[in-house]
Length: 269
Image 1: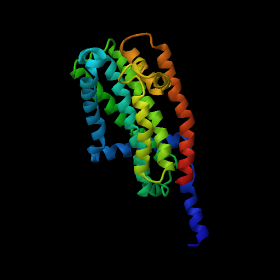
Image 2: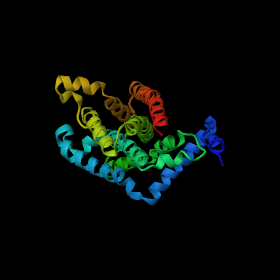
Image 3: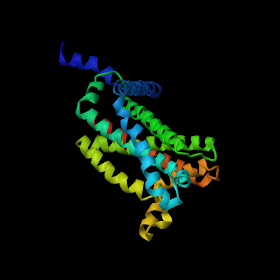
Image 4: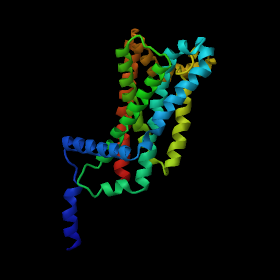
């Protein structure tokens, strides 16, 4: 068979399907990601253990200083740890993506008659499971320690908001995974960015206790707005402003970074 004939045979396989078919293929790749978790449950180790360690440790370290005791601190702490753990879990998306690209996994997908963006979208959708596990574990540990929200429905809405926000942030780390040279570099830079975002916020302590310059940064920190939204929802307090800010922020991150990530991925894949 001539080279021209081979090209004519392969071209239909590389063609981009319609939007509906591409979405269905993304769901299929997400299912593949879930199967990987099923066959290797250790992939969930961090989102199961970190909520336990983080909630117990921070409650006992900061509880007495911030609220006079663990029980009084839990309503502030649990929403803060919810956000911290879920956002930290989103870093793994970029690390695994870079690792899969280095091992040639996505090169093999290129030979399949699927949308080029389907493996990327499927990988990010599968990681939503990690965020759900992280959020569920944090709430379970908090409840076991005595946490009782004023509104269980509000807390559930806050958990959904955290999962959605973690998914949108995962596009940022996915972009880093596509652009950077190694998985270790993605993890190192991601943690360098994430550490000040997580701790220079109101997740663990009130911003009023911080130095002026740090408080100014903390009060515009997106993590602070997300934590405030979850606390307001769980406390059944008027949460219109904080929730709106969190939703608009998540939508803005998705609108900016999803196209950038897809464009960079298509160029490199």
